Length: 88
Length: 215
Image 1: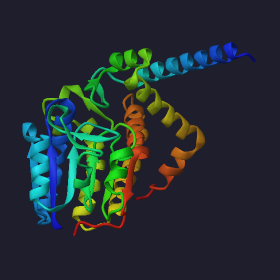
Image 2 (image 1 turned 45 degrees about the horizontal axis):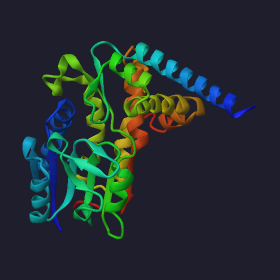
Image 3 (image 1 turned 90 degrees about the vertical axis):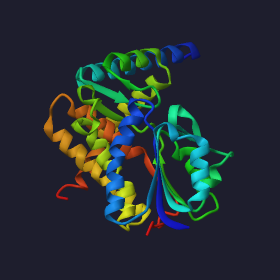
Image 4 (image 1 turned 90 degrees about the horizontal axis):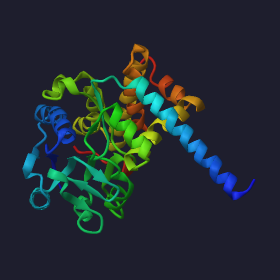
């Protein structure tokens, strides 16, 4: 595969990740909820989505937070951690 | 070093207002356990006030609430209070809990370099979710409460005589229990709450002398 194809592939993956995160934000954030992250104040769902679309520092942190949780679920790390406190 | 706590409580925006409001629980636990506590509040959370109080009061533990970055902790209107290579040595031999974004990364590591202190903080942004309909009275915000009740267990554990490591672990286990509780609810908000708590769980770290105690 050429460098140009690799770069195109990476951009497609980034775009799909952004779309996934946006879908999750739309599904999870009720209109009354705000996310507090960094020194940007509290963000509603639309503001979070704007940051994700722009790909700025806050957007990257939001994406990373979603991916961290998805990875933990997929790897079983989340389940193992949660099981460790069952019955406490 | 004296047995006591210095705590910053800035309130220059919604985020710091929440951090400071929910920190009042820590003051109550200090009073109950007869641990001296000095607070620096609102517009008084400036670099000069914090530095002079740190020098004057030789208290063993410091709690910072506020915005942060890998190399600094901020106060009122994001004034930089403690900065790597400028005054991080003020944290030497103390127990520091920084409820602020990223500060364990560089500042935390520097603060405990070649001394007996320890630093508990976050490697990514400290995140929480608020219910905007309760923003005027944060203590009635049951969505936000879980993020602070769990993280407050870091200083509360130390006040009650546990080691820094035990207090850090106890707070993190409390986060896991709250994630379990949120996921069992299966309502629209529970995924966002669980995910945000998980972020803080993964991100909260202790560096330095983990066996350090306050009492």
